Length: 256
Image (tube, rainbow, N blue to C red):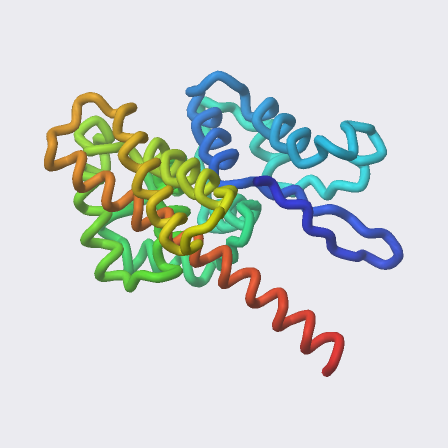
């Protein structure tokens, strides 16, 4: 679900180019040279999906503000991709209903989730996987404290320098719960309690997602399934929190 938020600059209204979490996961995969599409194709597909009704005209694109971080990454050598904290924040803020700050992320990597993220793996730069883990932390903190975040993610991610021993790697995990959230978010509610239907949808999709991970033990499947449900629910919470803030801001602006 790509967003089409707009900000007014003088008399010109520019549309913000933001990605759904699933599109961001695909973009992160592409930055590692993995997946079917290139980084540019991921962004093209996301933009086209957001403008499916209005068409893919040059006028529509000219009304879209291309974030500098996207422009920079599209020019980058994929063999040397790394991120500063500011770049991680800039990229993360292109995800719908996400609000990262450099100060907060600095605190996370130096203190709150230091043992999970580790030191920059590419000189002074963080890797794509480390960026993904910080996006996961941002999602989880919508409802969880840092102690809980550290404990549940430690069940998934092991050696910081060797992703092969993870129960599930960061980007596949991010992609999985992003897809589950999108499925639940677009769930058609008929008859029963909305909350119960959404919860059941998330649980069902989490179990279905496990079919993509054949090498997990039964215990690992239970762990991954439960954390996928947890992460999906926190994103849902973040969505409603963002929506609430919009209404409050609009009310205060129009009536203040």
